[in-house]
Length: 197
Length: 405
Image 1 (tube, chains in turn brown, purple):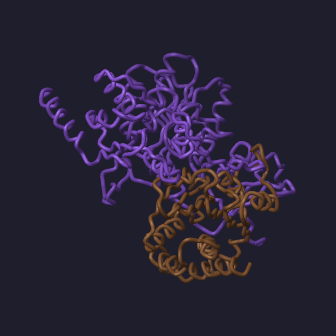
Image 2 (tube, rainbow over the protein chains, first blue to last red; image 1 turned 90 degrees about the vertical axis):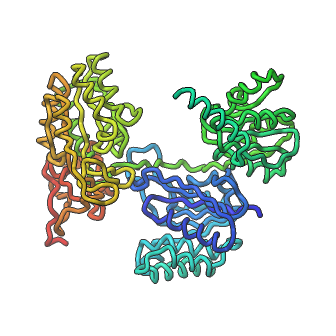
Image 3 (cartoon, helix red, strand yellow; image 1 turned 180 degrees about the vertical axis):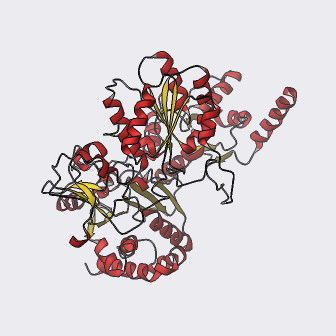
């Protein structure tokens, strides 16, 4: 079976690694092979984080250029940075809520317009689902459940390889009990936001 | 003893030649690939996705090198060695070819089929196969963003004691009007001092090398040397070079940035703390006592959040003729999050003259300029270290007036 490739990108502290763990556990529960690698150098100090996940028959955990089936991006700028991984076959789920790099004023380039970012991704992918996941997370009970909003959205995408119920089971194992209700609400809201769009 | 070891290696070679850890995959075609580690994964993905007829020998037990196994494998195959980093296996295979006087080319890093640099990827393997064979395999295309993307660099946390120390070192250097100062650094969060406006890290080699190389610079040049090392790295590899520095009568300033943890890798304990790796109580080894015992004649302890005193201490250290050690001690913000109380800091807009030195010289991430050009402190990010309060020439930063809340 050709692997299903998921690339997740964002900023340290957004829950990218946890999301990847839930996806990996769901794949294994579904009797599919799973490999993953992560780049999180100095993430706690405000740097970028990305993970590469392959579900199915793959040996290496690196997604080759243009081979991502799904890009889940927790922050718009990190979406742009992931462009080498996507192609016209890639579905993109993006959180439109911005985290500005601290040294923006000292840097060469300014933060692009969000409309321009969405247009750029639209040109280079199959389909873009852009929405404010931070807002949905807050409505679900806590901002920190944003990663589960994104995961819920992923589960609703056409061709997503894992069953929604299996993902929910993995959430129950991997997330702290006291915040589980909020996270489950966040997941369902993310799911609905794609299904209704 | 040596005889025993040589005999053991002979036995081990036998094990290596017959070990199931060294395994042949596919076994067809005229091309053979010898590979190991993560490179094996890329090779297999490329072979499977392109349905190629290529034999693969995966070496897992690589020392002693399984010479007989490799000899049998390469005999009838056009061989490519695919390994990351240095061409170790490739040289072993060349030596086997030489010993057996075979007339045979092999491909790898040494003949330019594969690059000496980079971690590998499927694309690198595909390129190599296209060079060696007449198959014209498709290389994956990378889309590029047409929008220019700003960098997202990691930085020191708001309230980080290292930021305060770097600020004071810079001030001390400029007040003494020193030029061409050399800043060796070491491995930890404080390596981020390489960034502007701190510019306090000229190079980084390996753990403990900040002190070792400072000794060399102090002998070879007349330039001032200010060297940085963290508490954990000091315990790990900083003590022997400090002993040599004193013994060899070197002259430099060593700043031990003691933030009471191993912050960069997630807060592991080290011998300077009263808890060991298992979480049990343990004897706390004193950095001061170690420094004193090496014979250092200038030793000061500072709280880096006290800017005025710190600057004065760094100036004295720079003027000392010998090894001057300053221990800059304040706990990492991950240990000591917020200072107590509900008070928060703010910029008094009626006093601020928008000189922006809190941004250009201190560069704390909790301080920002809004669209109207006014400077603010983000109360969510601020850890109330009070350093900005001390450096503001207009006294424009202070406790937020609770009536305005």
